[in-house]
Amino acid sequence: MARLSVIGLVGKSLFFELPHFHAGGETVTATGYHEEWGGKGFNQAVAAARQGAQVSFLGACAAADVAAIAEFARNEGVVAQLAQKTRATASAAILTDGTGETRVTVYPGAALEPADVEAFVAAIAEADFLLLNNEVPEAVNCAAVRIACEHDVKIIFNPAPAQTLPPTIVDAVALFTPNECEESALGTVSGEVVTTLGAKGCRIRSTGEIIPAPTVQAVDSTGAGDTFNAVLATRLAEGADLRTACVAANAAAAASVSVRYVMPSLPRRGDAGGS
Image (cartoon, rainbow, N blue to C red; front, top):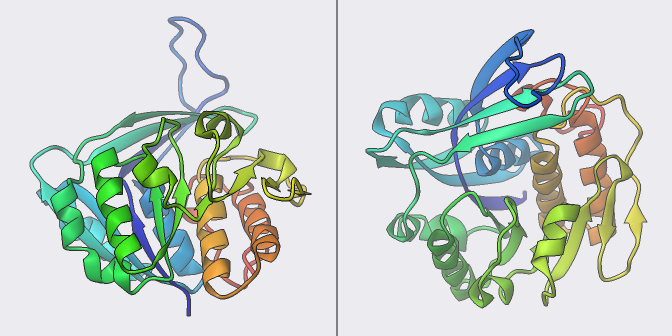
């Protein structure tokens, strides 16, 4: 069984369906509304668990939300370690227009600190891969990278949102998974890079090969990147080669964009697109 540890943001995702995005100071009336727990790291943790991986997750939230988030994670098969903070839990507003394109505004809210990672050492040490992203403070990722290196655990880094990374992270990561915009900010790295290309699939930097994704009717692209990362990591942890893992990740991500919202869209092993 694949064993993954994930560090990231967890919070409330608020979805608004719009006929079109705002222009200037325009007020647009939503035609639909949905809310759920989310966050880049949390989405990846749930998606990986639905693929059959053994998943541990570290995030931060307000004390009032610990029980609800922990219960949701437990029901999904994720072992969640939640650092309680005085600041409100993170939240995000996701606007989706009639074409399936999205615009996201994030309130970072409760944030992890390097000391919180020290309590996650055992989970990192037991993992096949550690999944990281830029939705947590850089110091937290640096602490996690140090621990992973001490225990010879490979790191998959999703550099989103895009930002300049310190050598401490760049030199330790085995695999980066940016989108095209994030790849331009990533620059030269020693690890492998798999760039997601939306409907076109993904590209493996070392070979230049573009692996196409299945053609689907997209209704909501939110969470597709998280699905890709989760499936890619799970397949690699199971022993698949990179190209085979990319094919599976493409299929799962393509399936996810045909379903509205994130949690309902994360495919389970055996579902169409989730195998």
